[in-house]
Image (tube, rainbow, N blue to C red; front, side, top):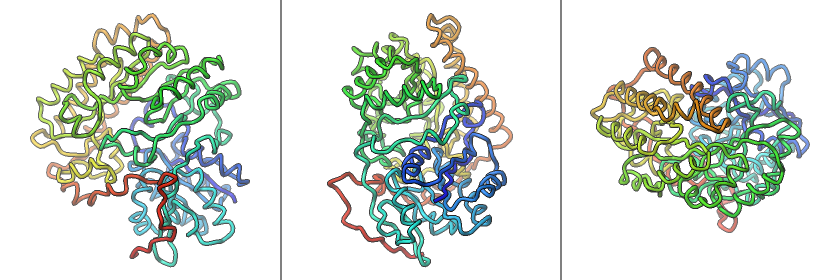
Length: 511
């Protein structure tokens, strides 16, 4: 079949301002299996080219496909944009089958299909196995009831099949790298870059995480094969930087070390950036020199909060001392630390923001990223805040960079002032400026300068947007009244082999 994979334009500020883009790994991951199944597949990256909806429709009309598959890492924040695109696609040609996948539709499949007649099928959970089976059924004109992990509409009814099984062997399906021109994608100040996954999932129980349950279980790729793939991307396509999309690439010390050593043997000058837990850095203090030798230049660490009590409530599973030690160890080995800090887990007062700033100062991270707590209905966190008031009614701005939940006693303008002031103070510290200008490692200096340039653009844009384009509710609705009740029972989107659902038949819902 003729298939277009569509990456819609992102609505988040950070996607537009820096002028650099990373390839849409999720769509490329289903593109590989579809190509191997013999289909004619192309990628339309509307986010890369900043295409508006009329331009997207014109591009699709120029080479009309039978199936359009839409997915986006922005998920909830991009959902309204996806709906508008789907309406325009069906107006172009009602015969196009529209398939929608990703985190948000995985959990909201029933309401989406009931409310949006333009979407035909939703893929729930991992798509590499499900998508080719779905396309085979569409091509053969056979019932979709036999395809696990989907929801669809039939005869005016919304149906869903049994949950898909977790893909145990991540090397079973390949990424369709041939769908992109690698020269179009860069990061880290112009370095040719890709996004990859060494692992999927996370065994920890952070109650606010919208990704953990989507992947259901932590698994990793074959370390040697994975290193060989990255080396090939460098040698054949000039890729210089690897950005890990994993929640926890270091989850297995043995597997992660095997990968690093295999990559060192490949002898390619790659730069590696990613996210991990402070506990894994402390665990690996004796092999951090291997991290550095393999090309690791930065790890993002989720600091989240200054309060041990809040850390326990959100089930983070870390400690302040461990966080501080991880940052110290990374610096000792010439690896940058980025500390993410989340505002809004509790209804903070001004004193709490001051304590947050002092707390971040004590860590002395190289880079910081402040985020707002954003409630996802499928997470356990949602139930703990569903009686708080919503200050941002535009769901396109539920992207971690806009305040969503009201802080009682602190008006939104003052929350924003604290947020932006802390960012400036943290990045303008004398020791940070010294590292930016005079650090002995040229790669380290480059990373700091690039982040400063990018951060300055985003910071100024966010301030201007807040002052002139943001509407916030002073006495908004309760979260449960605005978005509905929690759906924590849906948190795990797939089933592991051996724990299969007995329900193989669709479940009919009232339309």
